[in-house]
Image (tube, rainbow, N blue to C red; front, side, top):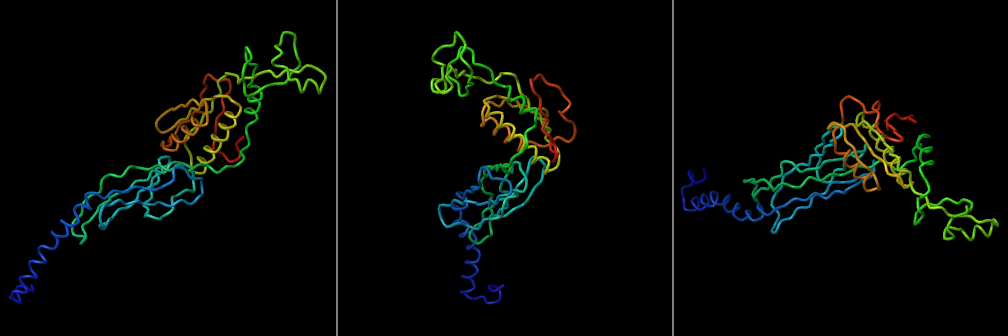
Length: 292
């Protein structure tokens, strides 16, 4: 309009500048637009109720161009979804996995006239772990653990021992000399090993968020108690993907099992509670507040 109204040499220069400026801005911004990368900075695990914020690390070899994105957070167990911004706190009121992914990320040239999608950013998963609390252990589990040890055939090294009187035929290497001197009788430290009978924990991945919190807490509490006694066990859970099982021999196996359950959808109906499996002890983990 200025060029048509003024019709002098200066208006021609202004017109050329206005036409070439967007393309010059695009040329100047192109390297930055192509090389911009996003990286989510979030903790791998947090405790339930603990505040944790989302941080976005932006890598750019030159002056950073304008960037637009939003962060989608979802909980696979319940299907809940949130749209958050950088610096917002993660929803950590309940246990479970939080899948975090930037959505609609696009970088613009320095004038904001051209837009280009940013390369796909890897998804991050944050595990919200149950609060550490004392959970009453069922009496059936206590009784089983009390009987879950037996003398190790052939002796040898063992982490647990049982003190008993000396019997003819016992090797002198097993004699507890200090204790024997105190009681004036030969006492033996007999190596013990866990009973190999299969212990089974079953669980339905269903219910409201409060029920799931209690189930996860009990699974971790019972599992750690069993592992501390040196015994292995199996976990069978009915999930939205069907019946799944894990063999737990050490704490890393237990965490892997819980992490898998965190990122699995809940089952809508059905229960594994009434099913019978081949096991020495079968214990079902429920989500009721007063369950024993």
